[in-house]
Image (cartoon, rainbow, N blue to C red; front, side):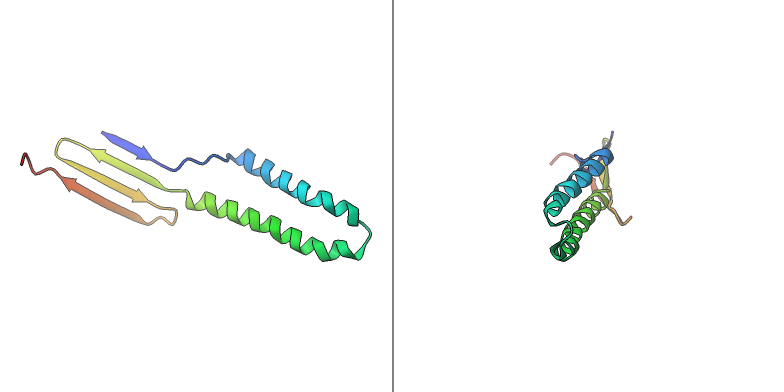
Amino acid sequence: MELHLWPHQSLPPEGYVRFLTGTAIFIALPLLAFLGSVVLWGLLPFLALALFGLKWALDRNRRDAQILEVLTIDSTDAQLERRDASGKQQSWQAIATGPH
């Protein structure tokens, strides 16, 4: 018997785009009051940095969640193989030794 396990990603790609777009709009709304003033140019870099920080965090989370684990069980042993986001593979094996 073989079982494939991976993390659940609750934010699908279209939700990712909608979330970033909505956040950008909500960040930009208060800036409308400062249109035409020097204050806008003082606030803009910090708000852009916040938006790009959020995008980086979401991208990093999605990349780190690319894990696959395969659990294989038969009558004599069980084996777990894990592949993480970087491609590194790990393997564990348990062998049945009979009744004790």
